[in-house]
Length: 465
Image (cartoon, rainbow, N blue to C red):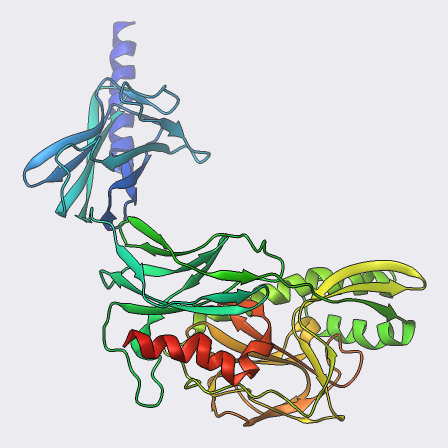
């Protein structure tokens, strides 16, 4: 019997050796998910440890700066993935994939000596192996930079008047140079850009701390929505500043659009043949409603995404935008439309642009200088061109029968882009035109007005020099 026990023990030792040789003696895998580089006044720390069995023998998270080591979390009596928070309140949780997550915060409360400058986060963990006979450990660290001072931001321009559905401009000063900044209108953000990029004639702002931001009060936003400047540095420190402004609420038109079978038979199959973003079923009218609502929403999201491609300098040079004066206005901005089919209301949508008609296949020109960021079919808009004018400002031309430009082309004001048509959801040959501010559709009328350009934009830049 004793001999069998010895043999069994030897087999266990051999099996343990195979287990070790197979790589099971590796220490826990440690991932410092947060912070990536910067530490601010209140910065979350997120540590994920992958340990076979979901348990650790010990775990320590520390913050080191100028030779001082401050524990953020310590457990030496074993760490279970389901244990309660420790005495300092650090949650230890089990992820769905079995990994252990520890979350803490770096602040002056958790690190009393916290100061600006270089620092390091160090994580050590060990786990039991070979039935508890021994432990294996691992360590991970990350160098970080501590920044504690908040950005400074202040308004420079005066007299900010904004129409509901329209655009305004603010010039402001922000420091240091590497912060993100701009304007928030309600919960919508509009980034600012170096004002040196807004040069016109002999006017150029040289101060690198001065920014310019175009922002909008959307047609469906509350006129009382808060409008203020914001600034955020890479460490998460933030500042904001209110500035004087006056809002002019607007009432938008309402209209009824009668749908008929010949129209549905023309537009529905053609649009579905050019997109895989929606796959409606049922009668043509049911498919149309999906196109008019769901595809419209997806198209709007795609249009908004092109704001990320905007130039940090304005490309239009401060000149008034082409007003398409020889065209009849068939529909104005933010018309509220009720769609009717065989006497019943089937849908409600808001038309965010101007429908302009002259004669079939009219040459369509660029409203101002810029760069083509889109030139292809786009769902309900049919053949569509989007021009970037810089600093988040863009213009859109839809329902074209032909496109004569390509993505990346630099275009001049009144250069031909293509010809009007009936592609997309167009009921007849016309141009659908709108302006965009950081991807948000706004009323183009203001941009056709030289007095508005002078008072809202150019005057403020001259005054900020």
